[in-house]
Every structure is written in structure tokens, then in C-alpha cells.
Length: 138
Ligand SMILES: [Ca+2]
Image (tube, rainbow, N blue to C red; front, side):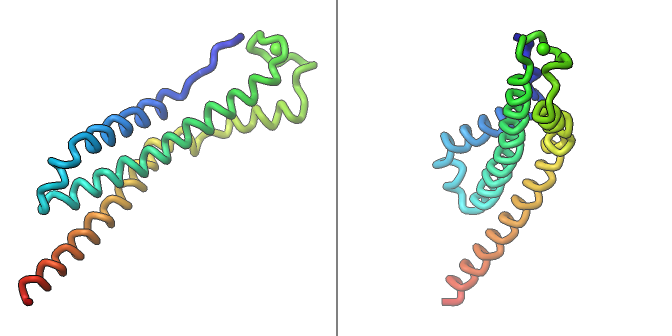
């Protein structure tokens, strides 16, 4: 069997996101207790949650595309000989090669997650401020 090339540039950010979310989960009582910091930590959680979905999803798609292609390597020598190349094999090959979107998802994911987390933070802080002002005016 030929070795699979694992997408470490996607696996690594996925693992980091899981680690950060795990730490936030364990420390949630301390982190979310401070009302001033609450929305900051909620937006950090949103950031890594969305980022994990993006890079984790890209990891799964990348590995399954490679596994699908390997099925066409009938003698398992890591190459595709003439009798192994079929229209289906070529389609599977295209799925592995056209990976630009997946490969840069660790970058585009940062931007997208950052924008989402930013909006959550702003929206949360504004609604919190409105609530607090309403309580003061009562
Ligand atoms: Ca072969």
C-alpha cells in the first residue's frame, strides 16, 4: 500500500481549535463569570467553533477524496497504470488535485471566523449595554 499524504496544514489547526475549545470548556465557570469579559470569551468560542467546522470539514473531504482515489490503485503500487485509468479514476483524481479551496481554508477560515466572532462580540456587547442601561433607568 502506498502511504497517504495527510493534510497536516488542515489537521494541525483543527487540533489547535479542539484544544482551545476544550480549555474554554474546562475553564468556562471562571471565564464566563466575569460579566465584562463574558462576550469576549463567547466570541472566542464562536471563532474557534466556526474555524473547527471549516478546517475540520476540509480535512475530512481531503482525506476521503484521497481514499476514494486509492481504491483505483488496484495493485497498490502507488501509481496508476494504463489498465487502472478509467473515467471514474480520472474523476477521483480531479477531486484530489482540485484542492486549492481546501488547502487555503486554514487562511480563509481565519478571516471568516474572525468576521463572525467580531459581529457576535459587537452584538453581544451592544445588547448587554442596552440591558444594563435599561436596568439603571428603572
Ligand atoms: Ca497501480
